[in-house]
Amino acid sequence: MTVAREKLAGRALILGVNGQDGTYLARFLLGRGYEVFGGRRKGSSNWRHSLLRVVDRITYLNIDLSDPTSINEAVSRTRPTEIYNLAAESSVAASFEDPTGCARTNAISVVHLLESIRSHAPQSRLYQASSSEMFGRVDIVPQTETTRFRPQSPYAVAKVSAHVMVQMYREVYGLHGCCGILFNHESPLRAENFVTRKITRGLAERCFAGGRPIKLGNLQASRDWGFAGDYVRGCG
Image (cartoon, rainbow, N blue to C red):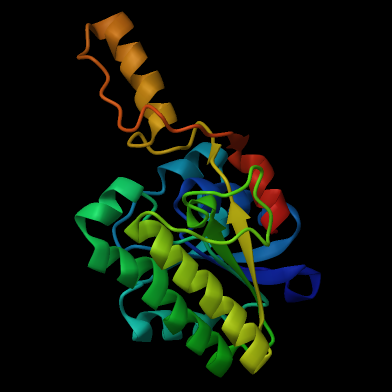
């Protein structure tokens, strides 16, 4: 991809670019004149990018979040002005099945990323996607930035660790790192293992193909949902 450097609004590295949020964010930044580098797992699908017609406008990098060398090479190669870390194990249920793997992906990888930024792109601006799951068993509704964290899952604990680590690097090393505490947000690009798509796909199968009953998890949970396309404009 050839880009006229003098016309660029910036150089963005999006980790987790193939996900729901990464896809909408890539389209948003491309529309603002950014050069976009997308970090993804090797062999992962670009079907969301094809739907939004951005697949040919992103420079893709295969990044292994468990490998600090892989992260280091991506940051040193791209020298981005902005970095968006949207890469994570996003399933709370899966974090209970593999808490160690979740900690590596959602917490330790953020340390690797911060060290890479400190070494190769200290002037870049980092956005770390934090999660409302960090609040856990809440004391107050609605929550604010000062509400204490009471994580109730390995996923939430890992997110708290990453959140605090970014704060520490900002205060100790002077890096420009910020965290956005995201509440639930959905879109047609949502993966089918999440409740909204699970329900809509299940209903369609029941209505048109005589599918099996829909099995859900915690029926006592209460959530407000936003639209992912709106959320990324707050990140960018």
